[in-house]
Length: 430
Image 1 (cartoon, one colour):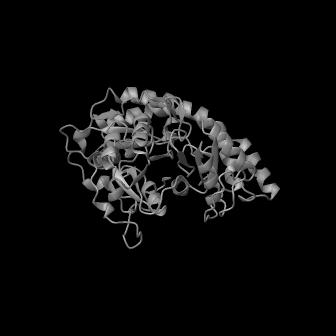
Image 2 (spheres, one colour):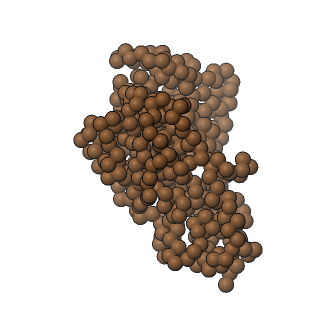
Image 3 (spheres, rainbow, N blue to C red):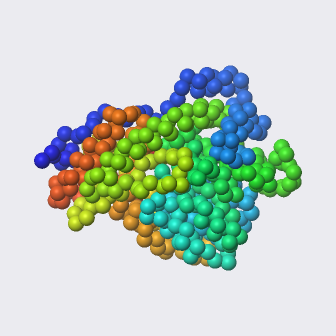
């Protein structure tokens, strides 16, 4: 029997995976050009590189307009505000997502209402969303998660039936497409994050896509201190703030967009090999294929832990896999209403008329605490040798669960920590 590394055996892998983020000499040249221009900020708005990137990114996803801004959370806030979400309105969000999806709703003055997720995609369940609708519901905010899309056609049908707005949270799916339609182009608006771990990154940053000119003009005003949009056909005036993206960030994002197709193709090819291998192993299950995806994004590769009669927890499995030299996470997300970072208090948000932490979404809870294993996308960028190590390590742990039956539970401690509890020294870009 091969001894698991977490119990003192030799790990499958010792060398690091491909570095992230990646850059090219063209990025270096653009950054130097911005530096020497002395035009570094976001004003005049939209500035040269920010304007160029926004239009190219919108074109790539099949939307008419794009507006860059400081990060993905602010992107959701201004998209909701520009769409007309008002104080006290309800916005339905999936429970299994980053806390910022729900906190953005609060910052916009509305109330997040949690819907459960589909067990095969981990994205918003259409039926759960339908059950969450009340007379106060104003919008649906589906999240395309990790490597799957929310099932947009029935969600859009539901929105039309109930006269609701749709804002897509696309923070994980740069370049992805559902039935030939790009991420962020299907609803009233789509929001993206450019934070360090994302498929495209400038360290921080974000963008909102829309094909509605009224929304685009209003989003620009919110981002640019309330100033009128360049087109200003709708002449809407709002109190804005300075959410502008810098030219340094925009220059980097132009390069990220150039390399996106090549890197996406590499992830898809290695992800397919990984899925085929995992399907043949005991105690694990790859997510089923999503035939609606016509351009597949993989921000994190997710598979499911299925222990059967074993008493080994998901957190122990993740800790054992990590010890084999394969960075991974189990509690990557928690249901927002159970997250230590979601410290929502009614005295801080006067629109609240309920305790948001009393929600219950059992599929989200199972994914968060019992089932999901998240592998960062850079593990798919190194080619056949890297993916062979990933497969070998998963197989090694999956077929040797018996070794972990009596292991010290403290070995899994880091993998079971909430985000608020994790040490700052943990080297992960979340």
